[in-house]
Image (cartoon, rainbow, N blue to C red):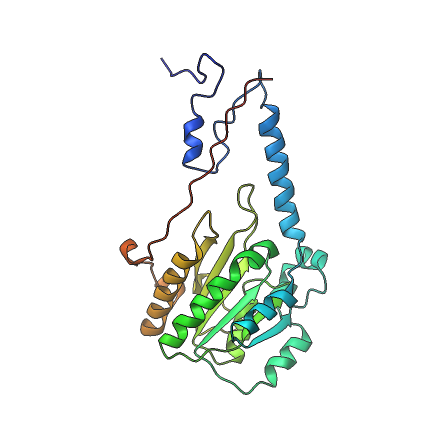
Length: 270
């Protein structure tokens, strides 16, 4: 005999599960349908995800913040001239615009590490979470004696656009921080893609990925520790992608307090 799904007062017996996950479980019911609160929450989260996809990156504020932290930066663009084109033509988001190619061509500078920040499919994630990750990576690079290229902030960019940028600086290490495709519980998820010896034409099997960088997922401090460990392995072993496994001991991650998920009061049937 299965356990009842409701207590005698009408509250959901499975509501405690929501303390462990942001997934849509234990939503309750009103007759054979969802309660009004659950339906409205779904519609709100869906709207937030759509807004994140169409949001525009405030490059001026981000570039100013990098400058305030004594980091050189470049503002680059892809071949996608606007957001609608970017969403319809992923291929254009993987290529630098002519002006940005010329900008890189005229720079006579080599670097060990290149950090690219691209809006991707959630400029919201980049605006809110990229800066502390960039600062942590830059500090880690300096402590290791690695030369660092200017941080490249790319509008309408996708992951592969970093390969041309890294190649232009002759870099052995590349990190692309990019807004991930929004989910209904995570419209602000930042992803990091790492590549050894980046160059145009590489495919995803050549990259490593650390995803869900945000306070409710993988906090910035822990993410920086993970990324620096992977970069050390890439630099030492001269490889990345499917040939590099994440064998970092969990105990080596910075001790970070992960926030508890909010618990909503179960709604009585309406």
